Image 1 (tube, rainbow, N blue to C red):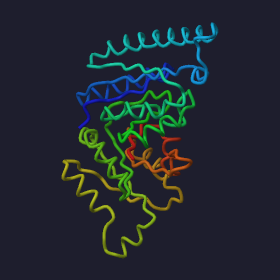
Image 2 (image 1 turned 135 degrees about the vertical axis):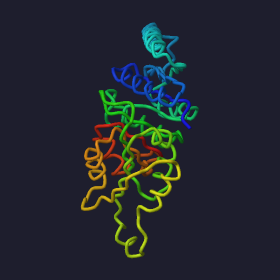
Image 3 (image 1 turned 45 degrees about the horizontal axis):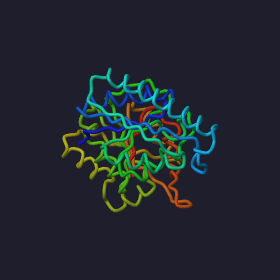
Image 4 (image 1 turned 90 degrees about the horizontal axis):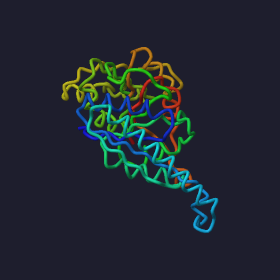
Length: 276
């Protein structure tokens, strides 16, 4: 059940797109909106006491004034939506953004942001942090996205993994609202499953049907790149939304996206709901 949607706000041009899209999803699911505006303080303040410098004091004052103006403009925009909402403004240093945004997102059912590698602020590590640390599904939008926010056709990129199962379960409220759901299976071990006399699509199709979803299952083969196969299937089925598990690996204690997840999020022309 999705009843509280968190929207990442940065003060950039992407805010209007994220707000409008999240609002449409909230109307579909009768959900509350929570805008999370992380005002990034000048990084120099994290290592310097501003009280002893007139220049740094002015820097703080200018930064706070800008944050207050941005918050007021965001509140005005939210008021016009006709939805229940709240805006949380947090003053943080740049190095804290990913951790704090992840913590805030845990108080919601769904996080909405611009997809990694698309935000004008070039902060893909922030979205990655929320994806891998928040424990919440993330709905990532293409930059400057102007497409549908009501998902008629949904593509589920299925692989029998924990991450994919989590994504399907998290997306269930949206899947039930869709007119068409296609499950795409791109599986390197498909041959082994066939040799065992076990249809790779039987279980996921049965699971969907038990939730009242008449999904069409496509086994996609002949591709050397699973990410490219998923993107092609999304275009072929006219998908408004892609649902998939997010895969990654740890590097220097920071999560980084794996190849398939990275490929899809980097190039998808429609929103992608991912879960880890």
